[in-house]
Amino acid sequence: MRLLARQPEVFVRSLGPEEAQRVKITRSAKDRVRLRRSGIVLASVQGRFAGEIAATFAATEG
Image (cartoon, rainbow, N blue to C red):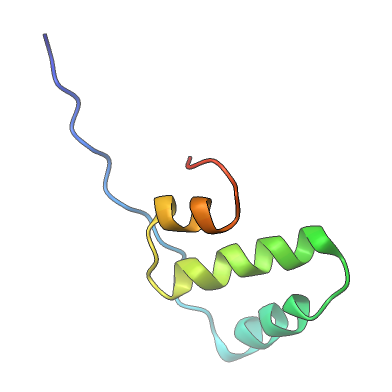
């Protein structure tokens, strides 16, 4: 039986000042999909693991 190694965690790259501002503006948007996506991106930028982010946003890892 071959054991599969756990895949390394993947994070979003650091955001530039303009990108960070756009994500913050998006967070205040009334569009729920954009709000959710920007929250996921910000959580990744902060170094949170995929499992934590998935649990926070009731999403699936992967």
